[in-house]
Image 1 (cartoon, each protein chain N blue to C red):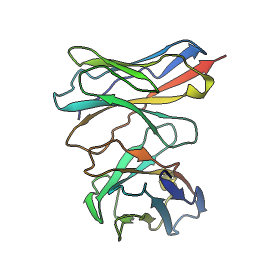
Image 2 (image 1 turned 180 degrees about the vertical axis):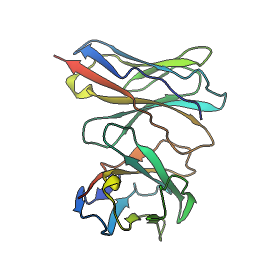
Image 3 (image 1 turned 60 degrees about the vertical axis):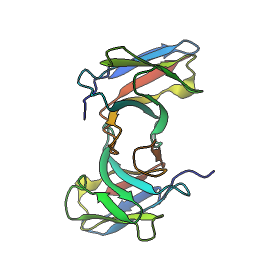
Image 4 (image 1 turned 90 degrees about the vertical axis):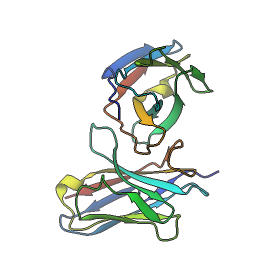
Length: 114
Length: 110
């Protein structure tokens, strides 16, 4: 079946602008995760959803970052007042149910803040 | 969560076995060893995971030492498409966040 998809694949924005990044998980997966990967580093955990609710948002770097998953499927990561340091690849993953199973990743969204 | 240590880079000739080591000396009894890889400009790809027994699937084998303080991922016949960064991750069964670290950059050469 279809894997995790993310849109857009690339996003260029200016400092101070607002951006939204979208993730479509694998159909039937109730757990969804966002990670951020800076150049030369491994992915870092941002937030975990179980269904519609954020079960753990401890990885979000500050209050400019927010994520939603209103119907328990598609999720949107929102970044307000973007800064150049927000430039990174934003990765989404999903897993079947409890959050303890294998996570399957999407291709990521490459965000560049000028 | 337990920390892992991997060599930053390794080379392997095409067709030969690639053996990627990982140290996790502080691993706890309920923590699993996961391996993911990331090919350039793609998202991480799950390879294999295990608790204490050796595991094998269509992609690779995972050998975990008896004391569980280290493991080795084996790609039995490496191809050029196996060139990627390989991440060894220790995760408790009750946890969900994957702590990737920097991984091992494997270069498979013709």
